[in-house]
Amino acid sequence: MTIHPLAGPLSVPARPELTGGRRIAVLLSHGFTGQPASIKPWAEAVAEQGYAVEVPRLPGHGTSWQDCNTTTWDDWYAELSRVFGDLRRDHDAVVVGGLSMGGALTLRLAADHGDAVAGVVVVNPALATARKDVKLLPVLKHLLGSFPGIANDIKKPGVEEHGYTRTPLKAAHSMFRAWPRLAADLPRVTAPLLYLRSTVDHVVDELTQPLVVSRVGSRDVTEVSLPESYHVATLDNDLPTIVEETVAFVKRVTAA
Image (cartoon, rainbow, N blue to C red):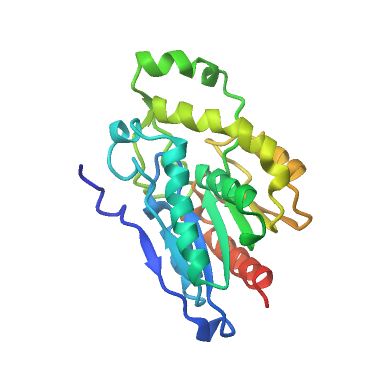
């Protein structure tokens, strides 16, 4: 199995001398059919503030869409859970976040781990869709291996996400099947939430934001619009806003 040269995970240790003597960690997840390169600029900028940052490569990603079709939501969540457990043991506080499906996976972490999650940052999370063809996936996944890809929804010219050019249908069906349970469990998300949403997004439609914001159990919810970016906002024009808002949020929710 060949791994894309940019798909390696990112791991940066904490520098507590920059964070008031406390060891603070931030776990960030890329999205479906993406890979770590899609969020590394965000992660690296957060790490510059002294926070430990981990960006794992989810199973089946950064290789081939055929490989992704052999993995499921449970596999992706297991990898994030493993990294979260390691960070929790070695740090004073852990904030989780993600792009697109990565945002949904980190909301799942927050629902499952309660107070162990200090905060959640999501960028264009995917948790619902108005697409009608999703209902046909139980059949289509056995007839077709893939659909056209969803990568590179980026407003900024000349930027490449390095995601798959095809969408693996078996893997996609696994993700869609996980959404209803997560939606039902959103009241268990009690950690502070920072929700960053592109004004124009050609991948995730308008259904997710009101669903998440109305159902989460957190009383601390901040919504920020990203007017100059499309779906992959972590590589787009609003990256400075994402970094600024994330750093301020992490500092606030992990204050001693």
